[in-house]
Amino acid sequence: MTAPALLPPSGRRIPAPAPGAASFPHHRATLRLSEKFILLLILGAFITLCFGAFFFLPDGSKHKRFDLGLEDVLIPHVDGMGRAGRQSGAHVIHGEGGPHEHRHRCLLGSQTEKNRVAQRLRGREAAAPPLPPVPVPRPGGVDDGDPGDPRVREKRDKIREMMKHAWDSYRQYGWGHNELKPLARKGHSTNIFGNSQMGATIVDALDTLFMMGLHDEFRDGQAWIEQNLDFSVNAEVSVFEVNIRFIGGLLAAYYLSGQEVFKAKAVQLAEKLLPAFNTPTGIPWAMVNLKSGVGRNWGWASAGSSILAEFGTLHMEFVHLTYLTGNPAYYQKVMHIRKLLAKMERPNGLYPNYLNPRTGRWGQHHTSVGGLGDSFYEYLLKAWLMSDKTDTEARKTYDDAVEAIERHLIRKSNSGLTFIGEWKNGHLERKMGHLTCFAGGMFALGADGSPGDKAGHYLQLGAEIAHTCHESYDRTVLKLGPEAFKFDSGLEAVAVRQNEKYYILRPEVIETYWYMWRFTHDPKYRQWGWEATQAIDRYCRVSGGFSGVKDVYSSNPTYDDVQQSFFLAETLKYLYLLFSSDDLLPLDSWVFNTEAHPLPVLHLGNATLPGSESRR
Image (cartoon, rainbow, N blue to C red):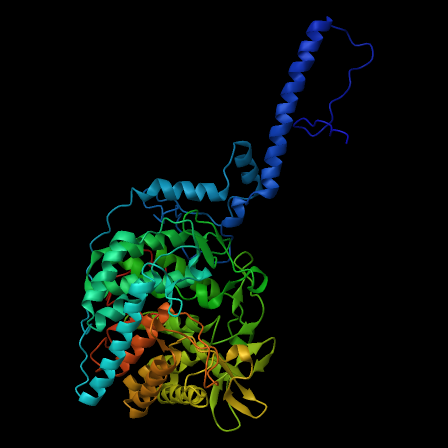
């Protein structure tokens, strides 16, 4: 192979000497030619390296926001630990850092984005300032909740015993692991936690243990967190799952118990998530490496898109983080997302489930109130509730979204069952997921404050969804609901495909029962909740904990051998609340995140959150 011609900085070939040019002594000519050759060789290699870096290394300009017409949103410069540029006061200017700047950095010997973020993470970690003192909301109603009726109390005690069995089994066989395999009697984890063992079940279960009065178990969990919970691990985790389970769980444990360690750990983790927002639009990546800060999206998500229910389910936790720390970055990140979505066109008023964080354009036009979309709508409503009903922008956005959902997605089956379908590429799929069943509780929770005096309508809609989801349970052999169920071909509220017949200890139906009970006190919701409790205890309980089942239509089901952390965080918590009095975690003082972690309403009065001035 012929060696490539050397190119000087101008890009031209080196010219040959002109004929008749004066000659020099041979040894000096040789020396000068050698020096020139070596110099050009080094220069050529350096230029080749720089051009290679330009084309193949991550382009720093791609990780800066471009102008989306959001000039009113102040985007602080956030270093690797999320300090929001408080010392320098510097701010990112939209659109800066293009290709010319990148070439200049290359000629100066630039580092890759990964190395820069990692260095900042390492360099700033030890210098984290103490958190500022703020008035901590103490709404009360964090324990007891005795129902009074001894028959109800007996059922509540049974649910508490189930929680103790789940916890003790995890304590014995899976301690420190994320979850438990109750049949194999060993730890379990999934890709949402990367390759790390961060004790997800411990963090997720803390507030449930506390409100049930299991204080010895709570102290065991706290001790593990103090001694072992470390976020400086080389693990790629789901931003959404870590936010709702870990940050939500730690904040709830802090507000319930007042133990400072939980607040400190929540802030440490939150700072590790901030690099996920380093995208051209500010829409975060689905995953981030806790050590390097490098983010990416799920490979299966529409053309590299971020997911509505993931980037739209950060608001509650991030507002509390700004409130507790005084760092405006958290609040500004989630408000930036809201402002961006407000400026985008929505097909038929619906929010598609996929948004590309590079281009700011919607992906596949698939809208769901179940998986991929669900908690986005939930957090719009709960942002309003958590603000003591002052965040009217969130309420208006929720009302508009629900109006579009009613118009395009909510239908009645031939037998009169109300269901919420999924919009896919211009048509309605008459299928409803177990995850969608949370919406009955959401409609009831949002009934008060609905526009046009429609509170009664939305409470009734919540009741209809609760009834439909109960039917999906009642029409199975095990009296446990399938993952998804259809409303066509003569079948209603029944799963058709084998891979939709499983039950993995999910909470959404019981969540709706609880909200409907709180707002109506109709005894059928406790009856339905007790049916589910008995079915879980009978068919999902094993000697090593609780397991999901693979077919709810089979009288002899196969176990999936996973005790999900959300079973302790959500399912058992909602059951316990269902059989407690209303003064346990009252809804006028507490708002539950999508993992059932209670966060207090922030009665800010005339005060503003740091960084919220532009909104106000």
